[in-house]
Image (cartoon, one colour):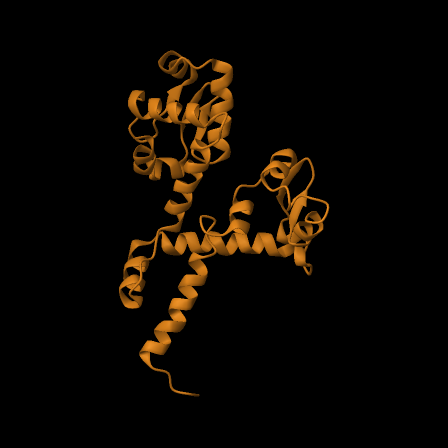
Length: 217
């Protein structure tokens, strides 16, 4: 076997790290799409008109995107031996990459050895989801008001839990609209209902509450 220098070896490791980083949904439009699923077909058609056109749909289906009233990913176990395993397997690789680079020691050692910055890709994706939510033209501003109220008025510093009644009183937003906003935040795994009439941060939302605070300024 041909001998390899340390610098050449580092180059190959760097290639692996860069490939994994570029799979993140914050950096790759295909993985971004699959990590936003499931979604309604109408919403996906509006967001990706070319991909969900007559010409684009057959290709998506071949890659394992299941298209009906809801757009979702075909479970790989049900389509073994076909190209439709692609999306589910890529999602699994990205989830494993999230777990790998969430470990500070991994990022620190690799970053120092390879002389490159390695981000926490889960945090990066969570921040991008917040940007998507806040920029949504009909719900974004009110979603920001809801999160800001949760951060300031909740008695729970960890979960920011609050009732719909308290949100209505503090924000002046109607209950019907608050329920829509809560569903919207839950759809992006930023917050979740802890009861039919109460909302709190999701697990990852609680983990990255400092990111939320930074983006509420």
